[in-house]
Image 1 (cartoon, rainbow over the protein chains, first blue to last red):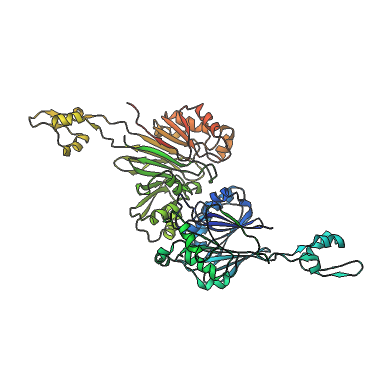
Image 2 (image 1 turned 180 degrees about the vertical axis):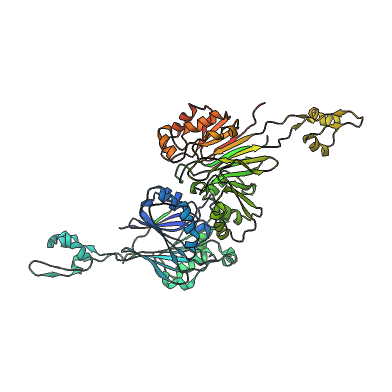
Length: 309
Length: 309
């Protein structure tokens, strides 16, 4: 099974504390690493998680609050110091270029790679990244400043080759990729074996969605429909619902309602306010609405397996 | 004894690692905290050290390399989030205003205190801060960019009151401060007791000097003469003396030579290159030149006691 695994680097809100680092995550898709948000301290958490800087080229920033992006200049300085030569791509709301370019020019002056900042219009749903394994879609969230969520979807998952048939028909190795891509095989005697006879279907593509920081946005439910894993911020417990609304955050129960409405497989909640010494309160409130809920914590890894068909 | 105590928050070079945080220190002078350099992760180390944000108002930055100043925006955001209202003063080389002001305006927008950036001309020796207990002098260092060291000197240390004389002469409490400041006392019968009869001399003022990052600068020896504690960077061992010169850093032995020439009481070395798994090599090389040398490490506290007279 090829990797589709999330690592939490930080899941607190606002400011680093002795309990939580502020927000950062890494999604490993077949050993390519995709970072989501990059708070102060992210580069050190990345090392602690045993992740490899060489496998990281794409960083997605949800919004330009310090607790989601202030680790960027230090992280990129470190990449430069470690002798990196391949480019870095940062995807972030409009304003990121004006804010970060002067810093990169000052602190990463003379580095041997380019830093591309791809600005996102947070008012629309838009595909912001694609390669042959993955598509990333940004979508609007509702926070105190322009903010977007990200939906990561596997694409182009190829069927499995039936080794028994390949051996039996003595199909040469150089032709196997063609079969994976959809072709059949004609024997020297002229007998045709269709693609379906030579393969078993691929696993269904996997998906991960990230919603932070935001009030619950019911309008996003169709987009989030059936994702394998949803991370949704749950800054507050239900008793602080007023405070959540006022600060454009969500309660654990609201996060669970989104998960429930979107019929996701699994919900992960985080971005906890420092006021909660025991976050099981948040977990309990969420689970009353959506049972398959987990609390984020630093260095937690969640491997996403395909649904059984 | 009033506090004059140094806390090391980070003493690695270049980038945070699993062993060391990059540079930051705090000098506690009578419960007022003075921060020296502020790398990424400093605010969390500050919490780990049990220091109090309310006691911090002055931050001294030696130079504008990321591993000495990239923790500033996050630290100041956190101060704002914690409801601070008193001003913050940052003392840093010329260029700091242009670099940091846009960040403070973006990330610390609408905060209820002022952030003053006092720019330092790193080419000259200059008093950059003074209050009734402390004087801070910036002085030139030799690095790849404009860099200064800082000398912290206690001032105005008052003599001790002789309680036996105060009681014997029935001097009212409200007059004690005058005596501390230098006055004598005349009894109702007209007998005069001079200041010296009513007090014992104060301890000699204490001093701390910070030299990082820099090549060894012999020209600074007169300024550093006899300081109680000298922190000097020792990025490399003697075998890397060529690399030290090329990158405008010092070896442990060179740091010790400065300590020896300036006849300081105690030398603390830090800013270690990540190449040394065992820094006792650096300690040994330094001690061959200057015996009273200590290795910095994270959360080390060194209380500086006055010299015995």
